[in-house]
Length: 315
Image (cartoon, rainbow, N blue to C red; front, side, top):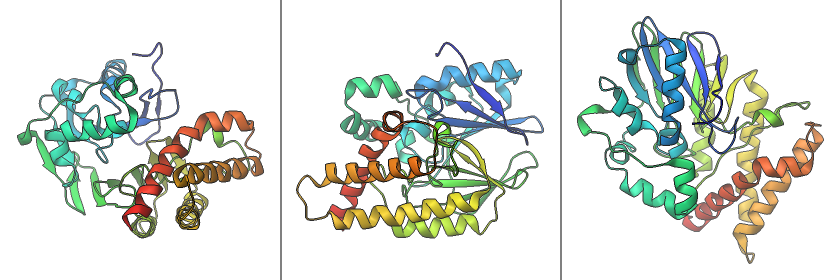
């Protein structure tokens, strides 16, 4: 557990908890409370479980009130801690996209895939171990499933684009969307310029630009007042973020196709999208230098390039 715990009350019974993946401000999960019922939307990794338990302790929330664990999708920065949390909250139910349920029940394939991306040493440091969840405690949620969260309506929406096993949750009370990775990545350190910075995580292996653009239109049709992003935090004034995210998804697809026949395609894609991000941030006078920008997004762009390369290969 890190030396300090960082969490923020966002109003409407919602708390943003920093899961301390690699550094502060990179990944979050959300605690939601209503009329004595508690749930987690996204979980962080298994290394994050002690952080979440400590936040409950500090807020004086009884473990018995935790009724639902709700990973937006099964990527390990969002769902890696689900098994550990379910061990602590024996009365809780896991709500998961139908395409992700088997990976929560038997995470062996999920673990192997992540090991192939990160390597064993980095995997252990970042994610810890994966703990299976008993099938009878796992509930698959279809598109437009409505959860009565003790009098608070949560609407689950199938949202492909980043991953085919991804859902987003619309909370009527806050008029907010819990978007996982679907509404992009927007780090706090890079949002101090004229406009905020957001980009799509195209991490291998299910990037689908056409589906993603359709998903964004569906989400915006709900007219949300705010989004709760795993990477990172609550954002309002969504129109410019939506426009930038949509444009970047289209740009990524164009860059990929332009470089399709070149040698060292994946490296060239990574260089191109990293430079595009740097150029945008410098133009927005973001307040940090080029080396700092690279330190914050270079690894993201490497993973994005892998996803874009896989998408093109699969066409």
